[in-house]
Image (cartoon, rainbow, N blue to C red; front, side, top):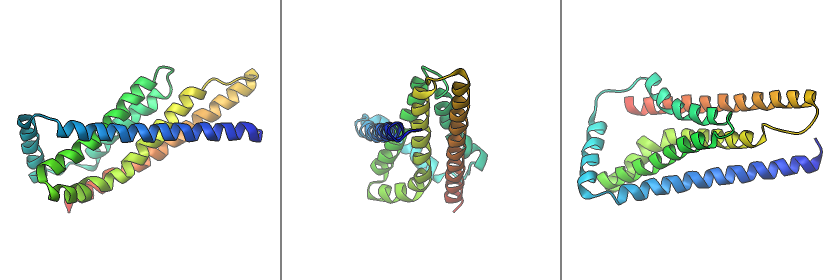
Length: 192
């Protein structure tokens, strides 16, 4: 691969990662705004739900927590294999970003200043692994979605396509490891 093509690919990857990070930030901001503009009756219901969830003695298993995160990662990953998969991947990614902003804002709304501390201790630690995992997977899905078809001889195309598929699967594996770490962190926080 010549240097010009490598630089072009590097710039494309940087743009994709920037767009994905910006869309996550905007989704989280949108979720926070949505939590703050809810009618007071619905905020009250959600407050009760959050308080019941916080007081619950039932601690979900590692498997349940892991599956909770993996299903979104799988949707993003599978969307990367399809030409129109951007809608599936994007919807799952947007839902996760909105839910992060919404949950954080609701915790702060329900618990006030204590909610900031609660969000930092009970919600932030696993999200330090979840957010990079979802950003990695969404960036990879978008990149590979745009680059599955390349030009060249039939033999070169087949080899290049197989290499890209292998890279994409490896990146999925890395994201799964991050999700496992996040599920483990959340489980430990719930036990403590």
